[in-house]
Length: 157
Length: 149
Image (cartoon, rainbow over all chains, first blue to last red; front, side, top):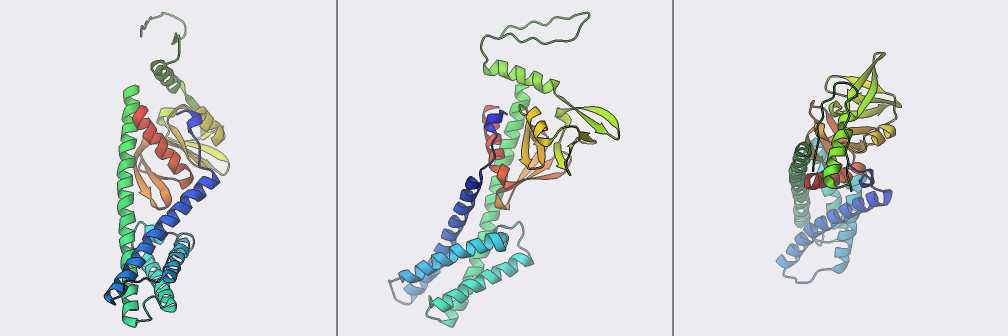
């Protein structure tokens, strides 16, 4: 390994990786919420979406992603879904539901808002499974590269 | 490539490499010789020992002291981690955190962890975490090494 090839990431690069991760996650959660909102509007016979609500949704998901990463230690990407992860899921679900109620996204309809809470909990759990699957695939690739690296070196020697 | 092997009755064993321009083949031979020659001197309970770098699993700094870990030994080294990193520059050692260098050849398996960290399971069963600061570079080295050697 040549020394010129070895370099650790700069602070800015680390920040950029983190920021892209947050934005990716925020977009993912935003689309989940938007999907629920769109279905709610369609079922109600409306083909119009409120752009202010959409702005509130994206800002909320963006803020929540920061909370998840820095305050709740990225629980949605955790190794196991235990009690702590369950509690944080409920907490985040509660915050989303409360803001949706305050913002009147679902016209303060109790049944729909309760359904929204369950939906948020469900997509958090799905997100946890997706991240777990992603890590398993990543581990497989890492191990393939490791074996190829070690075999190549043995062959060269 | 032409090569000559001579048996000598006295004097030191010696390898001479003659080349016109450095090419991957010569580089591999030089790399192999360097690797074979490289030894570190360490201490174990006031006894000085020489360790073959091939047998080192990882090197760690604890309270300002540097230790090399093999399968059955822990030796205190007289170098700082940065000095060791420079000494082992050409071979399969990777700085995986502020206080640790691992031997990639002694990694048994890898596991992807949240926040882009990697759990490296060594051949002796120990787990070493490659921090996210170094994980991207580790992935790059593995990929590059797997492709080009």
